[in-house]
Length: 349
Image (tube, rainbow, N blue to C red; front, side, top):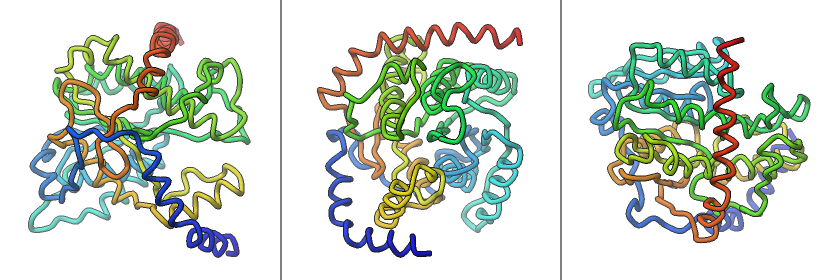
């Protein structure tokens, strides 16, 4: 279509600028982690074969790509998604893309219907996972959503839907991870790690549901920064994370994914994303290899939170971001703790 030709023209004309901006917006380097190398299926097998892996948001995008890599390497994979249809479709696709070879045999894969979009649906998922005899060695949480301007922007809890999944739902999953994950398990939180986020645009009123978002950018910034503050709080307030020897956790970035998951945000956004993806986009399979390689890497911090960008480089917060997170950590943790206590209502429904 004519839109595609325009996008290609834009991509060619702005390629040098976009490539430069991608690098400039990254946070300072973490020299301890350095660059994490990509692992082949055979190398990944030495880490995950026969082990249990949980993918929350595993039916599309980063989650599906990571599920594919882990399944190929012999892991017992459980993918979580909102509908049985999407789950069956993802499993069929993953199995079709994973034939046995002389050097590798796929693992097993199953689907669990679940949603971390509200407090009660998240607690229901946690109860399902906790009741299962299976205990997980790995978890990758990539579930996220952009605003759908044709529908109400807040969920049943009165929270922005994007923030609810990226921050509240994930908070509840991590707080209860010890119920369904093994000690020394590894967790990958996929969202916006490694970037220099415009922290001054974080909006407490959006985070608390006091007002609706009015644009995509403020929604993205608020849930991305909220996620960073929430994870920092885990290592301050949660006993399992604060012990620093219970879980190994890393926050990563999905990069520019070749998918339509982000479309529908307006003509200009869709055109710009098409242009940028054509320059630096990666497939679900490619990003899955990266996320899996990060998941098992020996270069991560074992006694604290690690950050790895979309190129596989370790990152740290700059001084301004670290100070901002510390200033807002107590406020957000109190809000999340209050929401956590309200989950008692769910068992009564």
